Length: 305
Image (cartoon, rainbow, N blue to C red):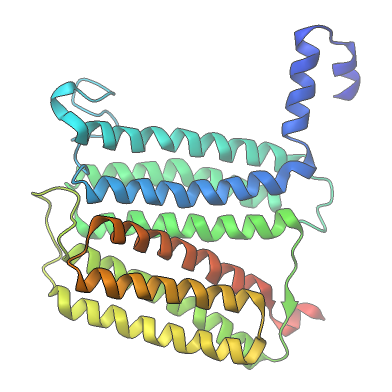
């Protein structure tokens, strides 16, 4: 490639140099961080769609209306918000394509194993998530489909953290025993249980994404207390991890949980204002990212042998 670029002249040579600069192996950590930030950002904008009752601003999919891919003026601001969120998917896809192409150029595969495969899977996750988003519209915002859409986004965030670890060559520290590793894994599992119960709470509450969207039919107070119970268990396991490991990773997770818990309590007692619900969504994304970082930072003792 370098010999070929050397034979080029004029603007083509400059383009080749710039391309090689933005896809150089040493740039991969930046693209990995960009992928993580973008995946968290799309959760925030998706939450904005739901909280402004714009979930059916484009009433069909893949088109916005039956005869147009762009919103009709009659759809108003709801159509603009929903269509804007759809457009951001292309931005996320562009980031993932650049991340994958950069990962392909990585030569130190032993230090950063399967980094190209992780980037590839993340890239596949974007159109897959777009299809799931389409089903949420076609299902008229069925709360269980909406919950699955959200959980897929959380899974992509977790995968993005794995990509960041591999891009930076972070290997983590082997824990001292199987029991301590079990605490880490249990904490990670309970994060996902609490997250799933959080989607049940959301599907039972007032912010449905559209005034005519169906709800789960569960008692919001009951499912909120179930969700809170999972959060209490999560915090207890994390505190145990703090005592056991005293690592930066577990402290980051505890901080994310405390922030998330504080916002959750305040929003529950203040009637679920939009700003606090958005902060709660950000907190959920940060908690998943921190939990994944915690899991990857404390390896099984077998892995050190």
